[in-house]
Amino acid sequence: MNVSRIAAGAALVALALLPLANQAAAHGFAGARFFPATILTDDPFVADELSLPTITRSPRDPDGAREIGIDWDVAKRITPDLGFSIGQGWKYLKPSGGPGITGLDALNAGLDYQLFRDGPREAIGLIGLHASFGHTGRIAVGAPDFTTLTPTLAFGKGFGDLPASWPWLRPIAVTGNLSVDFPTKTTSAGAANPNNVNYGFAFEYSLEYLQRQVMDVGLQPPFNRMIPLVEVAFTTGLNRGAGGQTVGTVQPGIIWAGQYVQIGAEAILPVTSATGRGFGGVVQLHFYLDDLFPGSIGRPIFGN
Amino acid sequence: MWWILLWLLLTLMPGAAWAHAFLDHAVPAVWAAVSAPPSTLQLFFSEPIEPRFSGVELATAAGRPIATDAAAIDPRNPAALVLRLPPLAPGRYRVSWHVVSVDTHRTEGSYEFSVGQ
Image (cartoon, rainbow over all chains, first blue to last red; front, top):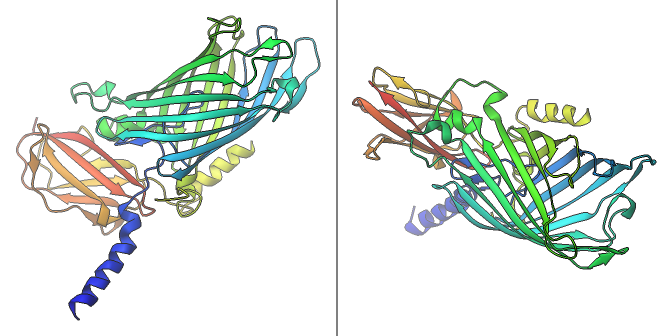
């Protein structure tokens, strides 16, 4: 066998192994840290994932109305660091003392770019531009007649890089996001459409991280894949008569992250009187498309 | 109820797809304190792994690498890595692992255990 044939054979083997050398990251990984897809706050990573359904029973509105929503959302990577998302919901609205009405909510879409992934520091960051499109839902259930553009910044940080002498703190992770709404119409039906700033955090304690990275405490399924968390999210008006007005919720709950799907459930507690009263709840079924379909729709469209 | 049934179908369906390989458990266990030096490390993962792109490194807790042979797949279990160990002195050790599951998803992690302490 001559040298050129050996070289050609080696090149073929290298080409065959190339996909393995460029292993897909996907999911919300930063080093050893796995960030689950949170329900309320934006995720700081691009991914191939599907939320279907997300069922929300909101706290009563300040005027007594009750809402139930059923939403779907899909995220798809275009390249390993660039992804888009699209989603919509169906809503049942029961005004106080009036008949219930149903209809589609606005169509939402977004384009996100993975700014960085720092494995040793378990840090991850993302920027994106999201849009809620006008005239894509039923206005009677609250869908807007205008489009809103929302530049977004999201981050995640795990605390696994704390000293080993602090073992019980190392499973903690925080994700957060900051965004500003820019409505394309200043008023609708005589009501102002203000610019808003949105900010939220998710405080997570990963039992899975505790078990496999810190200390084997003997957790068995399903507890060894659970992530208790508290999400908080606020929206504060900036102008047009809404300056300083804040609505927001605190949502304690739990996420179970399996091999192909995760299930999340959270209570919804309003934090201001303008948000609502009482409490609600949300459950979500979330599919990891990259694990379910690793050779097709679970891969980036371009690149690996 | 339909989505609960779908979840059960997907999670209970064996071999439907491969996923990210998570460390399931290890021997000695994560954060374990063993009295006698172990002769091997065994790491058991949630998925079969690709040996060409997987490995295990051992170091002292202070970060000094300890020379070992390369980790090998357990011939009886394609989801397990075995690392033969040299005689270990009493002390604390850090195990760092990286694996690629057979569908090319990469995961990594590290943990500590101690000997004779």
